[in-house]
Length: 289
Image 1 (tube, rainbow, N blue to C red):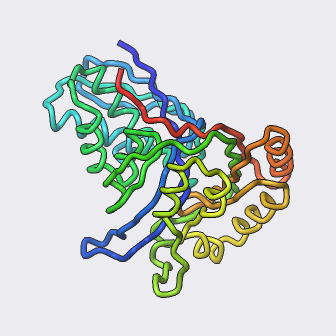
Image 2 (cartoon, rainbow, N blue to C red):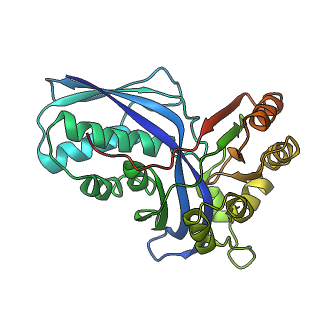
């Protein structure tokens, strides 16, 4: 049996870090929403008891470092599954970009194998398992729009934001998430107004959403990689309604309501970045078939 599953990317509309926890993780409070930029996961049942990762991207590990591999391994261990699976990963989401590509691949694998292996798990149960793999996996199981707390695994669903274009620019540089968090000085940051953003989304107030975009990690990444700050300035100059770095970066996204302006922002950025995308905000929760 063969199954295809979409794995959409996410952006952070608001990202705050509250404090470092005793377990070494950081306590976060953030709003994430899915966008129409997705990897494709192909799951094929194997009779032999193995997990195989197939990808044409040289940046995708084909062993237990891969989060989709870990998702399959977790289900096999928890539920005593004696057969294997081939996991084909067709990448569209840039790797190590702050867009949760790896986490979304793992989440799609959980959803797909639940169906392929007839496990009968609810989406809440799959999200709980996802938390064992990575901080963003729980959200990616659900998709949609949510306030995420804890390590990112405590999810409160909220209404989708107003429909708009999202223009993304990913520079060729990489950013270490661990290093960004290590350099973050919580005594010297301006915390985004996350609760106000929740209210703005619920009110479908697009101008207010634009004014409240915030990411406490942004300045740290800008200091490490000034090119990211330059992309943000260019995106503003080309006419995006609001601009923010997603996650720990280095991808920067701009929100744009009008088609003509989206085209201007998209075309302008293509001169600065190899990887530029113009996609729609999704914001709707994923349902199990």
